[in-house]
Image (cartoon, rainbow, N blue to C red; front, side, top):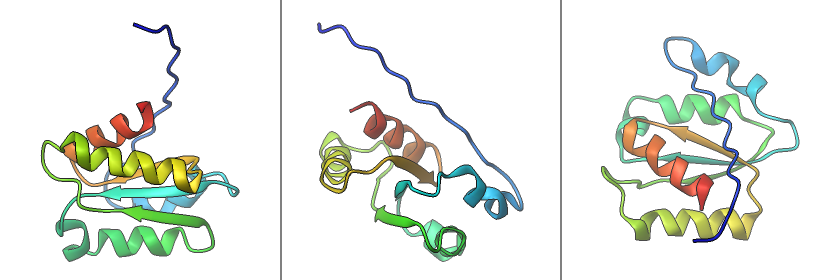
Length: 107
């Protein structure tokens, strides 16, 4: 095993009105990757609200993180992070999206 240091600061915004303060949590020069799962964040309008809150920032998206996400799915996101020089990960969704995004950050 190789020695390493991992620093993954995490902030969770949760609840009604949390999206309003989202922009204040992201550095202006960040290259943001929004991660999300299936259709529920689209159907409920949450993804659109997040997109609106982040207008003017450099944002990419990675959707389709399935429940208990596969290694292959998450490695596609890791490759996107590398290719696009992403500096900020924003998970929008439930437990599998949050866990998958933690994997992406650690990879």
